[in-house]
Length: 355
Image 1 (cartoon, rainbow, N blue to C red):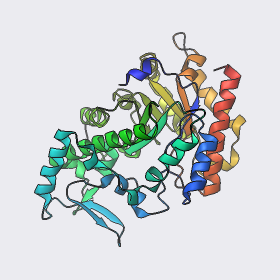
Image 2: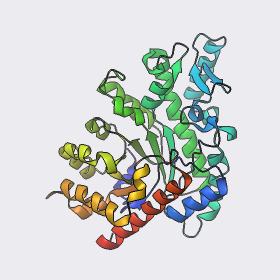
Image 3: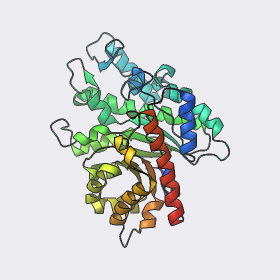
Image 4: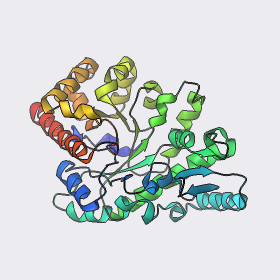
C-alpha cells in the first residue's frame, strides 16, 4: 500500500479507466484534457489495431508468446523452440530489475508513446494531481491468455509465476515512464480485472489465497497508488483485502451488490482506502442519463454506506468518480458523453458538498 494514501484526498476527482473507441490521437487527447483536469490517463485505443487489445498490448516479451497477426490470435507455446532461453532471460531481467526488458513498444501503444508527452505539455498550468496508468491484471491476463490447447495459462504452475512477475514488471516500467514525463506527480496504476466476475465459478477455480497473492505481487514495488478495476459482480471482500489502495467498480449496475459488504467497505475506507464509483454507464444506457439522474443514483448508494463512523462527506472525500468500465466498446459520441458526464458529476458533487 502506498504511503500517499495517508495524505491524499481525491474529493470526487474525475478519472477514467483507459480505453476509448477513438482512433485519432489528437482528438482523444483533447477529450482527456477537457474532462480529466486533475488526473489524465494515457489512452488505450483498441480500434486502431489488434495490437492494442488488453492482452496483446501487455503480452510483449512473455516467454513463449506467439502473435498471429492474420488470425488475430495471441497465445503461449511452452513447447516452442527457444522457450527455455526466453524463460532464462525473463528471470534474469526480473532479478536484475531490468525494467526496459518489459517495455511496451510504440506499435502496441500509440496512446502511451504519442500521448503521454503531449499530455505532459498540456498539463503544465495547473499541473495534475495524479497521472493514471493501467495494466491488465494478473488474474484476467492469466485466464484470458491461453496455450496451444486453448487452456488458460494461469493453470500452468510455471506460467502462473511468469504471469504475475510479467505484469508486475510491466506496471513498474509503465510507472517509471509516466514519472519521467510528469516529474513530481504521483501515479495511480489500475490493474484491470474483468475476469474477476468468474471467481468462484467453474471457469475460475483459483483459491482466494492465490488471487490475493497474485494481486499483492502485481503491485509490489510501485511508488504510487494502486487500484483494481472490476466491471461486474464478484466477491468484493476478496478485492477489498487484496492490498491495493483503491477499488473501482461498476456503481451503475452493481453498486447494490457491493453494498452487501458493508463491514468490509467501512474497514477498507477507515484504513485509508479509496473507492472509485463507476456510476457513469459505458453502455447504451448513457443515452438516457444526465448529471442529475446519475448524482441521485450515486448518492443513494453513498447514503446507504454511511454510518456513525463514516459520514457521507467522509466517503465522498475518499472517492473518485469514473465511467463504469473502459469506453472502448462505445461509439465515439457515447464515449464523449461518458467522459463529459464524469467531469460534470465530479464538479457537481464537489460544489454540493463543498469538497
